[in-house]
Length: 311
Image (cartoon, rainbow, N blue to C red):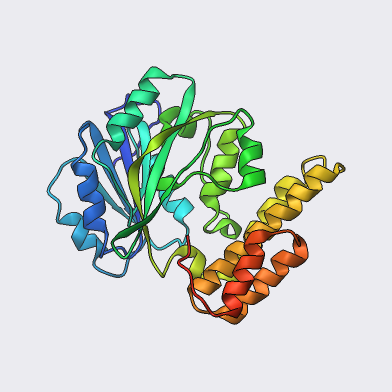
C-alpha cells in the first residue's frame, strides 16, 4: 500500500472507509451497496482487522480498481481500523461504513449536495433503518443539530452512528481529530469522537433514511456488557466532572444519564435472556435515578422474563 501525504491532492470526491472483522456473511452486500451508488466518484478502502473467516476472499472477489484491501493484525479496536483507513484516504470527503451495514443508493449524492452547498458544515449524517433478521424494526432518527451540540450529546446520549457519517477530509488531517484507541473506549470510540468534533465543528442531519444498520447477536456491546457499561459510566463521569455541577439541574442530568447507561446494560442482558443480570442493572439504574421510567419498565419485563430486541 502506497504511503499517503495528507497534503497531496485528492484523487476522488469520496473515500469510503469500511472496517471489517469476521463479516463474511455481510461484507459482499456492504460493498455492493457502495458500488451501486448513483454518485460514482469514490475510492473504497476496506480495512480487515485480522479476520479469521472468509471475509478476505469475499472482499477480493470484487474486480474493481477503486477497491483497496488492507489487512492488519487484529487490534480488537474499531478505532484503530477506522484511523488506518482514514490515514490512507485520498478523498475530499470521508464516508465511514461498518462491515455489516449498507447504504441507500443515493447516500453519497445526498451527502455531497449538503457539503458542497454548506461549507460551514464539517459532518453530515442521516437516518437509518434498524434491521433485525432481514426486517426493519424501526427508523433510527439521528440528530437534530443544535447550537450546543456537545451538551446534547453529553446530556441526552449518542445521536449519530458511524455508518451514517461523512466528514470533510480536513477534519481528520488538518484538525487532527482521530478516533481514540484507548481500550477503555471500546464500543464507545464513536460517541467520544462525536463529542470531540462537536466542540469545534458544525453538523448537519439529513432527515431521510439513507442507510441500514444490521443488528446481530454478537455486537460489540454484548461481548462484555458489564465492562462496556462501566466504561460508559467512566466516560460520562469524566466529561461531567469538567462541568460546574454545583447547580441541582446539572447534577440531576448527570444522575439521569448514568441511569440511562445502566438501562442500556439491562436491556442488553434482557435481549440475551440473562434476566438476573438484567434485573441487577435495572435496579442499579433506579437506585441512581428513582424516576427513570425506562428502568422501571425494563425491570418489570425482566422479572416477567419477557425478552426484547436490543436497539
